[in-house]
Image (cartoon, rainbow, N blue to C red):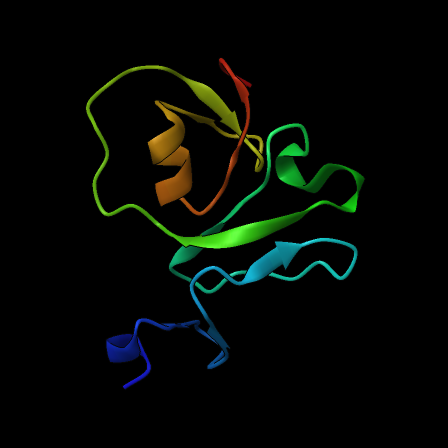
Length: 94
């Protein structure tokens, strides 16, 4: 029922509304099918920055423009990083 209402239901049974806060000093996390979108200049939660939970993309363009994810993994493009549940830390490979 929650999923039908547009609310992500994470694996632990907690719900995270779309557009909810993530990161920050408290280390808030997004639901299982979301990623934390940090503002420019505060990538990966630098300086305890707070981001916004976004739905993971279901499909990404077939464009090779590598980025380094906040998880330290190189992805083919920013969309692929988001689909894996992470934000891009920087352009180019890790």
